[in-house]
Image (cartoon, rainbow, N blue to C red; front, side):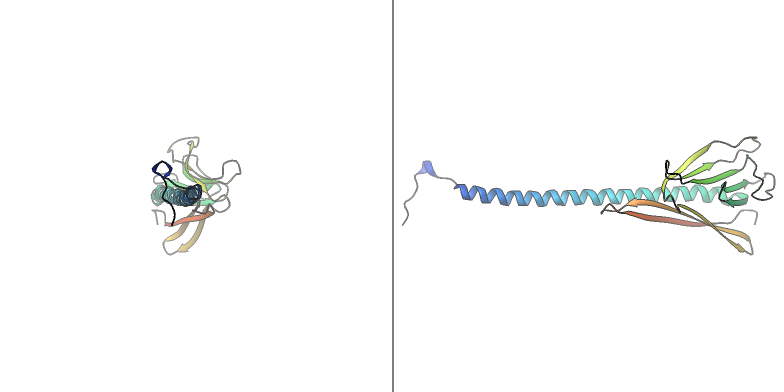
Length: 185
């Protein structure tokens, strides 16, 4: 039989303290790892939601303006040029009136993929200043326009492709597409 310890010597041994310290450190490391992962997931979800909302807003602005247009012209140099209702009749992409509106894509390395909007300015002799509508588009193919001829005229499908980071910090694409047929058709 062991002899009982006096009350002044009651407590934990050094080995018991070391084991409890190691167990506490393992639990804290697990909690910290869980906190970091939750933070990454939350940041990823915020990035995704922000990209979706930005794409929807840009698509809504573009769709509204282009559906109200008398005609639309697409070329890689000027972008998507549209003629507001009541303006001089568009004869083609070669002659673009400065009072017409336009959506253009800037994929330069210094600015990244950005969508710009030059609002229509009827009666103006110079184009209105362009405004940034959306940034964070894929620099190589963030703004695509395809044309299909239908019985009603040239139907244009516009696709905007944005980039966001997932929880693993990998860049992913997110896209939105919509169709536009000018009002005069």
